[in-house]
Every structure is written in C-alpha cells, then in structure tokens.
Length: 372
Image 1: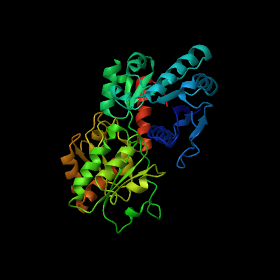
Image 2: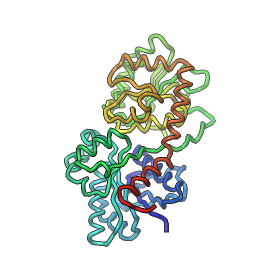
Image 3: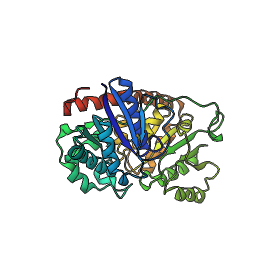
Image 4: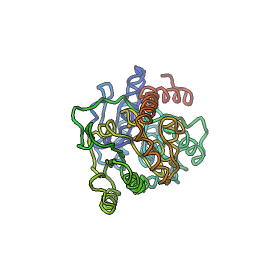
C-alpha cells in the first residue's frame, strides 16, 4: 500500500500557502512513492493543474478553529501516515487533532508542521499566529519543515528544537503553462513600453509605497509603466499615491486577477520591495514564466535564498529607493533582462514540485525513520 500524506490547508489554490500545499502534493504524486491528499476547510475549487492522483477532501467547516473534531475523525477514518499542516494558527489545531486522535482513536501517524516565516514576524499577518504558543507547542510535533534556511534556523532557535527535527523543504513551483493568446492588459502588448509588475496581498510590509516612489523617479527619464496586482489593505493607499504623483497614465493597481503569471510573462521585470519574506513565492512564479526579478534582501531571508544571493535576480538592500531605481533601470537593458531571465528559469527548475517532494521524503526518512 502506498505511503499516505495529507496536507491540511484552508484553500487548495487561491492563496500562496494553498498553492504551496497543492504544489507539494503534486510533487509527491509525481515521485510515485506517495498517495497525497489535500484536506481543505474551504470550498474553493482545486486548481485546474492539480491531477486526479492528488485527492482533494473537504472538511464541513468554514474555518480551522471549528475543525478540530472533524480532523480527529478524518485521521481515525482515513489513517494517513503523515499529516502536514501550515500557517501557525492551523498548526496548533492540527497538532491538537493529531494528539487527540492518537490517544482516543488509536491513530498511529505523524504530525509535521510547516513554519513559513520567522516566528517573530508571523503575528503581523494574522493575530492568531502566536509566537509564544509556537515556542511552547512546536516541540510536541514529530517534525517541522521550513521553506528557506533563514526560517529554518530561526525556528530551531526560537522553539528550542533539535536541528535534525527541522527540515528544509522549499515551496515548489511547477512549469509555466505558457502564454495565452491575448495579453491580459493593453499595456502588455508587444509594441507597448516596458512594464514592471508586482503581485502581493498588499500588506504594509510589501512596501508598495517604496515601489511607487521609485517608479515615479524612474519615470522622469524613461517611458515605463507599472502594474500592481492583488487585493489587500494597502490598495486604497497605493491608488491615492498614484493619483497624488500624477501617475494614472502609467501606473495602475488592477486588483485580484485569476492568472498573474500571464502578467509576469510579458513584463520587463517583477519587483518585490518587501521588508520581510520567509520565502518569496511570487519570485519563483515570475522566474518560471521567464520574468527577471528584482527583490529587496528582506528579513526572513527568502529572496536571498530564492535568488541564490543575487545570482538569479537583482537583490538590493531593504528600503533603499535609490538602489531600487538603479535596479529597475538596469532591467531596461535587453542584455540584462536576457541574462536574469535564463538564470531565473534555471532556478525555478531546481525548485520543481518533485524536487521539493524528494526533500520532504528525505527528511521523513532521516528524521522519523519512515520507509517511503
């Protein structure tokens, strides 16, 4: 019987952590060694690229806080060998469900937690992500995985864990599906000026204010455009900033789009000026689509890891508008773009779903002695 892994996540594809879970499940299926299931507590549809080999099960709950007894029942009835949870607040529920299922239902599987960001930063996006509970509770898990070396080291230090109990499993990126026939925005047509793009949840630490200011400076000497993709609390402010700087004819906050990679694939470069990133999944997504990337050397170490210390993309100091302007200006050179486009593609291939799946399988074998 195949080794069974269940990945608990709210959505199978709408948000970054949902995509990360589904892509890891895809890689596990591609190894031919694991029977993966994505277990969701939302009704969002599964992404079209997820094959039938990856099962998608639903919990009859609207949020993770109401899912504890349902997860316990699932573990008892389906008996996966490993339950993997992600997002700190969901980790607490998954850990409690695993411990309850063992003591009351005889479940014999393992619980692995995913820590995507340094613990001290987790509360910033969700008040339920309590770093003190992580410090007290993560030691009861069978293991923890993190997407970058910096986050792994921080998790070991903050939670007081043995180094061999925390594995490095990068967030995977599947191959780009290819360009659609028509550009998703008029500015992305072949005969239009260069366009810089950014995709995020528009939280304050994404530093869209810095990006718009840098773009305004670049715009003084170059005919360029900027598209900001996503929804979040920072969108009204960035729209106001674009208006205040008289950039309406060359900068837009376009909101949520179904396929942001269609924007990146036609862009001059993708720009991520964040103060903090535990991984920087939007960077690998852009790289997979052949889009060169510019990123701040964010706290959390994700962009440094993804770009291999700036080899595969331009890495600049945090909050340095001058160097951001210079990096964007460099990307206007076709030769520079071609170099980083190829290096980015190669890096995205190294972070494929099957590669990340093998990293997970190796961790489960080495740390837990599981035979897969």
